[in-house]
Length: 215
Image 1: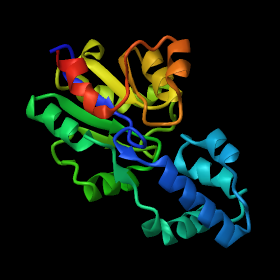
Image 2: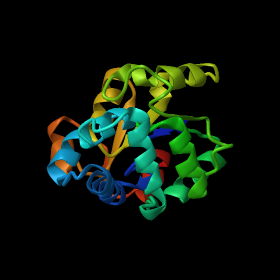
Image 3: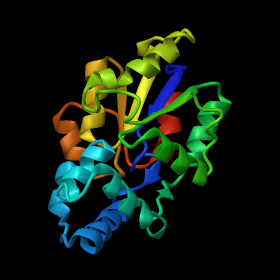
């Protein structure tokens, strides 16, 4: 097989996120800080590490700990959902002996929590790497260094790794890190935007991934 490892972005790649979380952030901003949070501002900062995201969205209206606390207080009202076929794709890759990992901009604890709640087999997965693991974040290619070390220890070189994500910053990080990239059209960035920067592997749904990489 062409790839021995598939690394996924999490939000809007494996799970449906932005619609629920935008509503979540708007509710927090309004209830606790009297802020009418607009889509334009959410779009501008979306994809940043969580702590930086809430700093900007809530106008630094409290300490980081306070802003996290009020965010979590409404979390159950705005749950994430599975992307269609994502759980089947992950299990199918693992059953074929392909290493599967996640590199995401949310913190590792939240990522693990989301994946467990939605039924992903995290004990079979190589790593769930959140923003708390590295000092750099996408689109910086060094975000992949920890997972590269794990894969190298298993004899897997970069030419056998592909990253799957929904955002341009996912592509930029993987391109500069020297690994292949597949764009999935379940996020905010468009087919035209991906094509304009040279992305050739584009799928509309995560369910199309198996045919693309296994055939």
